[in-house]
Amino acid sequence: MSSISEGLKIKGEVQGTEDLRVDGEIEGKINLPGAVVVIGPKGRVNGDVQAREVVLEGSVRGNLAARERVRIATTGKLEGDVAAERLVVEEGAHVSGRVDAGAGEARAQAASRPAPSAGAGVPAATPASPRPPS
Image (cartoon, rainbow, N blue to C red; front, top):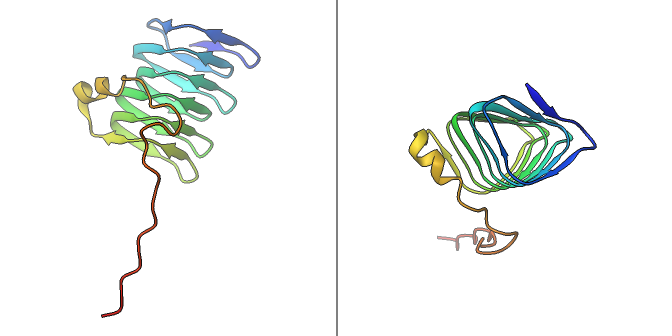
């Protein structure tokens, strides 16, 4: 497994076939369709992640697409869409975006479209209005 250690920052696209652990920062797309990508608790990714399996313990601002499984740990924070055949979201994790679980490979590839910028095109949540008494 390759790793990007804490204190390292990479700008640009990461491609390859080997599993990857990110404890530093990546600004750009991670494209490892046959591998496992682990974003450690201190890891930060600003870009889309496409892999066979993704484990998110840190933060991603972008879309996650996994052919097999995405696991978002208690410490994980995702601002973007996620598409995977199987999805595990642990209690305490933060997910802000659309979720497509059981997506299969075809739909998982659709998650590789650019993530919306913060606040753009995302409707604000509105509280449910109370029902008038009957």
